[in-house]
Image (cartoon, rainbow, N blue to C red; front, side, top):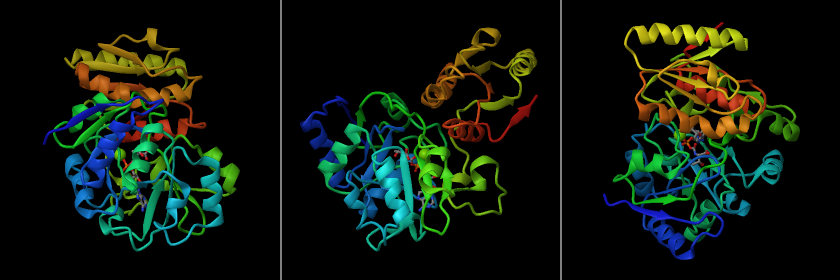
Length: 350
Ligand code: TXA
Ligand code: MG
């Protein structure tokens, strides 16, 4: 397939380029576009044949449902059965922005979007290119992250090119995704709201609006093979670079020492070793490649860098990455969730 790459200005998206990409979507094509969280791979959410192309391009399992993206709050009404008062509160507090809300679906949502569930995930992104594109297309847009299934989500257009060039119709280059981690997913379809995936809108933010919020067990620890998670995406290995990832957790000095010892052992075995450090510790490691993801005092920066750095380790070709853990506060919950999954819950406590 011929993939067209369109560079679009984030601050004032060029109308002709948006028009070109919107036309591809209306005609049943696939368009990768930037959002404030990560790049998404979009298609007409109401066109089953178009949505099939997303699953094919990503190699995504058919039982993992997609998020439907809209450009105005009013558009939610025809996509869901009803909007509860609590859901309305969330929308006015956090939309447009990195929050996905799950509600009972209406009849116009095709099976392929929800993987047969009776609920649908809806998100109103804040990124100017995403919003212009959805508005101009005039249709709801299904969009998972624009990576090959299982790989870290793309935070720059080059990541999308690396994974999907030749497999999609258009890739929009709109710079760097600011949040760097996928949206928070909250299930509002049952009695008590349940946080299914942590993200830029934090657990603390949600509790301010809703009071009680359950945390889905699949979010924080490995789930047994026989448990069906509420969010089907939770059961898959995710965000993993080619290299093995091992997290080392504990008091800072102990972590630094433990990682240096582990690096030594692996290097003696002839492996190429990477360390994912923080600004505060980056100079203290001796490995083949040592990258910092940011300062421990700036978790937003760590979130923005995490997937980028995981992909960078793959580019330099390390066999194993030792990663320092981070605090669970605020967006730290989302960082830990992605890091734990990248590591397949391979965590050493020191
Ligand atoms: O930030 C984001 O959300 C990005 C950008 C492109 O918007 N999209 C994204 O999509 O991360 P994806 O497909 O990579 O992740 C969607 C997650 C999956 O874990 C999926 O299982 C879950 O949302 N999901 C979708 N519909 C659901 C539903 N009806 N019930 C429960 N979980 C659902
Ligand atoms: Mg994804």
